[in-house]
Length: 413
Image (cartoon, rainbow, N blue to C red; front, side, top):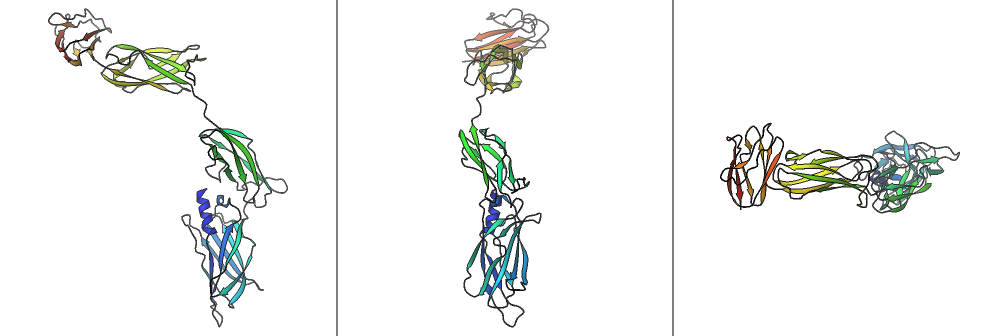
């Protein structure tokens, strides 16, 4: 809309200066005329045009044509030069001015009124500015009414809604292609981004707004569109058994569906939830896709963190606002794999745990070398053993089944 209003205004403020000379007679006359076009309709900006055609004829018979020219209106222009030269037979002469604005298809969409307009060209001095309205003569110029087909309705905040309107002639028949200008009387509630396009957008303030469809000939119709806020969305709630889990140990992760008020919700159909970790490399879920069953209101799964650090887990489900839970894992995990302790040396702080997990098909132990201070006994495939280290020091250990398997735990104060 701004583009066409700007282009229309470029013509509206332009002056048609007729610098008139007689190049054929025995005397030469220099005359001036200033012509200021003004659109009759404030909604003229919705109609495109790219040129002005100017024709000047003598007012006296035989009404000889003295000028017929076309002035291009570039899309980027902010003004147009309508200075023209025409022959005159005397120092003061009445002429008829025809001004037409033409679109890219070659159709005249606006013209001066009256058409033609009688103007007097005189020599010398400052010319009198002749004002005349520019009226619409394109498709639908003869419309007598417009009706909005869309009934009173509502639109959500931020949503778009397409409207339709029809222009009618005096015989009650529709006139397809008639330009219609749209505007809102309360843009905080419902706005019209482009007056030439029948689309409204829900604003940020609840309530009704009058939407007007207006023809360039002045006829209008109104409907009411009410802006309403987005309905509150149900959401998920995630909780972890511990916000400071030990590396290598499994913890329960709980997911609950809640209504828009934050109250626990019993689902009427199975609700599938997808879990994603911000550090998927070091996070293991018992299942990353879990389901709240029909008539259920909670579901749980196990999660293990393989490395010390901060983690964020996000749960999402169709139709629900997602949620996340954060945890900071500490300690170290040692894998028993290929008859090796991996990694062979770990470093932790006093007060933290080391967890050993057996990934081999045979049993292993983790047994401190000197005391032993600890001895896990046989750890079967897939099982774990945890030990809390409360004091600083360096501790070496081995597997009693496979003496070649050795490791070290360094505990810092």
